Image (cartoon, rainbow, N blue to C red; front, side, top):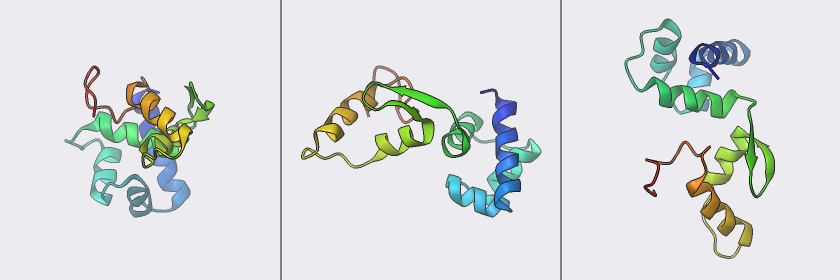
Amino acid sequence: MTETNVIEMLHDAVKTHGSQAKVGKMLDYSTATISQVLSGNYKGGLETFLARVEEVFGTRIIPCPLLGDIPLNRCVRERRRQFSTSNPLRVQLYRECRRCQFNSDRIEIGREQ
């Protein structure tokens, strides 16, 4: 998605949920950050912020090698779940998610977390 599309998605989320404070809480960002992004005055890492907006409010489908086609927000939930050696699927997801191209949590390509 383009930057403009994601900012539009943010604007729609504020309209849908009724306030910047509610949307900020859903995104784990302050109301001030939401306001600054919407007004075009945000000086922080806009790319990181917009990725979070898309994760929470987007409808993009991700091709997961283990779970099939899943929504991006499920992808995020699955890769952030606690690791468990007692669940074979959790072990597989842990391995796959760490190297997945759709994992925005990776620090740097070629470097593991």
